[in-house]
Image 1 (cartoon, helix red, strand yellow):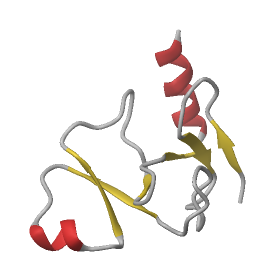
Image 2 (cartoon, rainbow, N blue to C red; image 1 turned 90 degrees about the horizontal axis):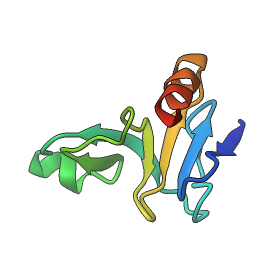
Image 3 (tube, one colour; image 1 turned 180 degrees about the horizontal axis):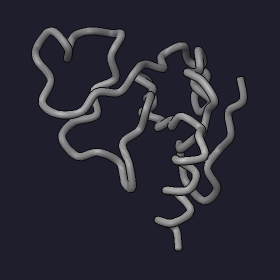
Image 4 (tube, one colour; image 1 turned 90 degrees about the vertical axis):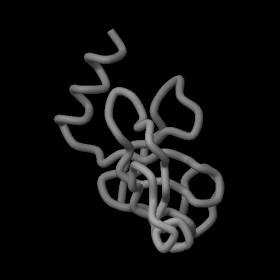
Length: 88
């Protein structure tokens, strides 16, 4: 697995697959991120990272840490292109 910190961003990372351990805080709390208003069941589910109604810009995160709220995106050429175009 390769995880890379996104330059000039706090708690933002690229990863080629879902990390087991958070690259920011070191806890085993990385989960799939979901958006929107969660049901009570989803909100209390420790296997889900609830982000809320407003996704990250320029695209929603793939995974998040339930401990420190670090954002992790799947590292693909399409995602890298979106990031580079957004930064210009």
